[in-house]
Image (tube, one colour):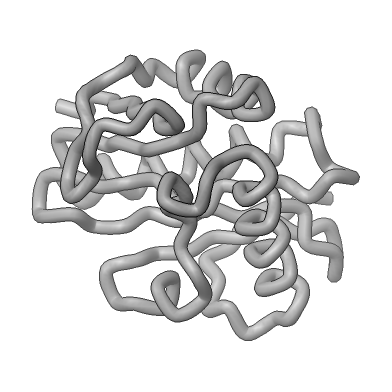
Amino acid sequence: MLQLQMDALTDGAVIALLNEHRQQMQRYSPAESIHALDEAAIRQPEVTFWSVRDGDTIAGCGALKALNDKHGEIKSMKTSEHFLRQGVAAQILDAIIAEARQRGYQRLSLETGTHEAFLPAIRLYQRAGFIDCEPFADYQPDPHSRFLSLTLS
C-alpha cells in the first residue's frame, strides 16, 4: 500500500532517487538549464520534502520550496520507474498543493524541461490546473525550460 509522508532525507533510497532524477535531467537538458535541487538544497529550511513508499520501497518524491509568503515552487518531483502510472506523482502533487493552500500561498509555480520526455509530467500539472507562465523567481527565459503556474486564491 502506498504511503505518503514528509521525509527528512535520512534514507539512502530517497537520496538515490534524487540522484537518479538529476542524472535523468542531464540526458534531456544542457547543464545550464538544469535546476534540480541537490541533497543539500533540499535540506534547507524553506523546502518541505515528501516521499511515497510501498512498504520499505521508495515509490516517488517531491518538494515544496517557499519563494516568499505568497508563492511556492514545486521541486524534485520524481517517480520510481516501477511505480510509473500508479498515481504516485498525483498523490505527491495533491499533497504539495494542499500544503501551499494551508500556508496561504496565492501561487504555486514550477520549472520543467521542454524535451518530450517531460510531457507526462506536464500533462499531470495541466490536469491539476497549471498553465504556462513567464519565468518566475530567479529563472531567466530558456529554450530548454517551460514554466507553469497555478493560482491558488
